[in-house]
Image (tube, rainbow, N blue to C red; front, side):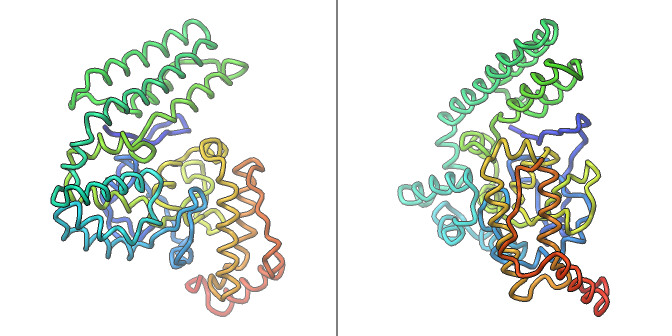
Length: 366
């Protein structure tokens, strides 16, 4: 089952993964590292290079500690030599604290399987769980589709009928369960945008609520069952690497690049690939609705940044905490209000420090 990120611009672009992922995480990556088959980090993120050197940072969205690109490359080389579930569990046992929620749940299932059937491969384990998982996955999908239908009843009769037609087709595809015609969240989201609705008034509010609910259709990044169904036919190495790839640190645009977000460090966070992909170009306010703990996670993130600066890191970027405070407040419509009281530099002092570094070393240092 291929899952695609929501496009909040209503201009869904063709999204293809680049094999060379150097600009964000310093290693080559395939299309299996997140809950989506297709994702892109194409935008220029060179201004975020200083952030990519910071070890032990926690994701400002999910709160999990992140791995650097070199870490992932080293882990993947070890996973390439694993022939069964026991070997994989042994390698990954040291990295569970980096795993995101769904991946950690799947890892625990593999760990239990390693004690009972240590010689089985990861795909063989997934196939054992497949029948139960696909039934549960269908129920998860139907629950969301049912909610979409209920919300649509507040639209005009014409639009409500159009929505029901879309969701009915989705249910047919889900029940048929054909490999060549699998249910794709992308298809529903695109088809919903094809329905003409009023751009103002109550209808517009209902329509946004409807699309917000459709976003919760399960993906392999948010649902154990979707993970099992999606990866049961993949290779041993693909499944193993998929457990840690969402944990790699990437450069995330606070204001999405597709919405004119600039290539400046003040518009960048160091975020996990899983969170980066899941948000895509979703408005930050919407993402916070999905994950209400994001403001607290961002506060923890800036506290780590402040600690690094106090220790002498991020030279030339002393004003970074103030920059992201302003940008996060704007993009979250005030839902994220960072407390910088622990920072020993005022904004003016930070600016002077940055200017001094720039004059002494030039842009290359930054």
